[in-house]
Length: 175
Image (cartoon, rainbow, N blue to C red; front, side, top):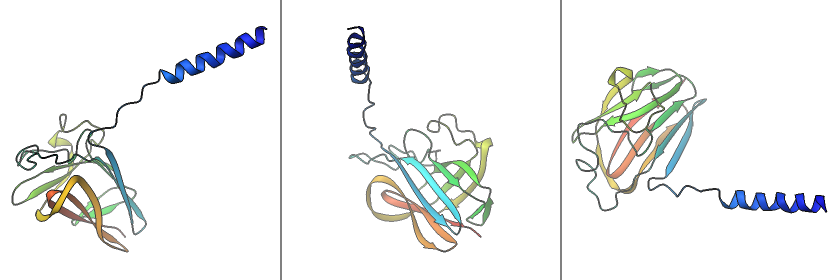
């Protein structure tokens, strides 16, 4: 009888504890990740994908000429599995916060040494490892922010950032 009581009590406690566990609702800007092996080096980008949702994006939701986390929620993170060359600049392997400063005629791409942060609220320019400029291009409409790799060859690829009707890209090369 004692064993039956403990078995029933154990089952009851298990059912109560699992039914009361809370699931977080899905994010409005879902998490995403994209990876590409370039040469022998894996490059991974972790980010959140905000949607246009009938909003003005450039110089609206995302102010021009100001620091942007290049996504939503946590700062976007780019990770290089080995040393790489980005737009002609040597970048050691590791993780970096990928920030941008969008502009009408040019964007600044930023690799910040502090990668584990929420948004750009604690961003410090003094922690930047690298800054370089790229030209934005008009593109087909993309509802949710999208990072892709294009023009992939054995030892190089372009990282492309697309959202709304704008895209920017930068070249990553390996040995």
